[in-house]
Length: 296
View 1 (tube, rainbow, N blue to C red):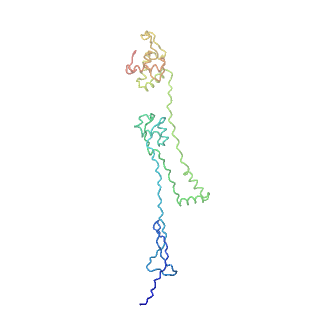
View 2 (cartoon, one colour):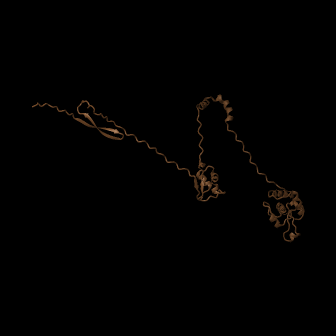
């Protein structure tokens, strides 16, 4: 019988199983880790080696927050009860005031800027309330600072003459005196006689476009009343009709009232009022007092 040979069983080495965590992004994976159980034993040939390494998850990108846009300035305004262009311009900060607002809306408002009614829609100029930016400060250069420092450190005695010479230039320019306002023409004083009455009447007639000359008036006055402002005719047909001729140029009351010139007295016997009304009547009927050479 053949001898039984001894067969040696292969010795199995116990192994320890471990778990290694490998990070992939933000997810952890469990991987088996095989290591020999015997201390000092060499790693099994061909076995893969795994190294546990923590991988940080990428930080979330910050989200930009956009501030809400400021509301656009109103382009129009609807008139309410009690409004005026001046009040609206002040309330809305309109540059140029109510005149600028009126020019922008003249077609809607009309020729009278005081007449605006509730419900009327006005256009506001977007650039009307702009504020003028303040001028930028001038940057001081090193040379200017050095110059100022040098002036401060210079003794007053050595700069006395220079300061005296520079004083006139530093003084503010004299403001020219305002031109005197043109005085209103002085009122003309007319003599209280026939010459003065005729001259004052001629000045009034010139303002009202009534023709006539000094000689034409004087000639008719001397024929009608001899220069007496209180003269009255009590014998002619006018007197018989109850309307006697009166004054320097012998005017009846109905004619005086019809041709009275504004600015003169309503008294028929007033010399200036009498002459002016008579000349106004003569201009209407004869073209001028100069054309009258007899009773008229």
